[in-house]
Length: 147
Image 1: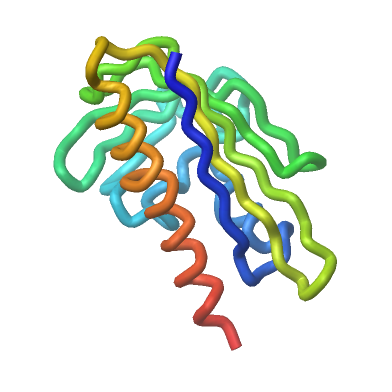
Image 2: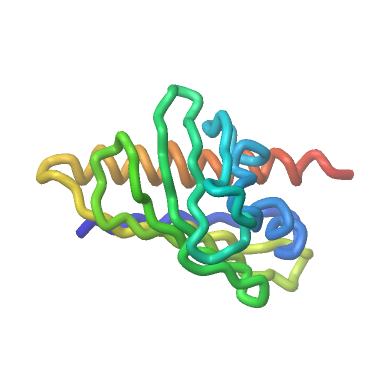
């Protein structure tokens, strides 16, 4: 099993960042590699078990299922149901922790999955840097513009 963990600090309160990332259907709003998204069967985007169907800007189709969502803990977890990446048993968690010194937050995104032998490094780097860190950078850019 492959494990990925990426973390960062964002110069905004956990409440502010959570309001941007909480919506399971809002990836195109805050993540630069996502082209579009919809929740299947018109379910609410905060309903545990809802499925988001989205495309990356390079045309990849991904379907993910919301497993947990906690406004109290600023956390959500989801699994990949369908993806061109070649991962199985993929479960990821996005979590925010308030930093009381300076109204900032600590953000962490982790995932575990299985993949074909020999692809572990490629997928770890692609997901860790290309998805997780890219998302953090977009959030930092957004919140850095406030004055």
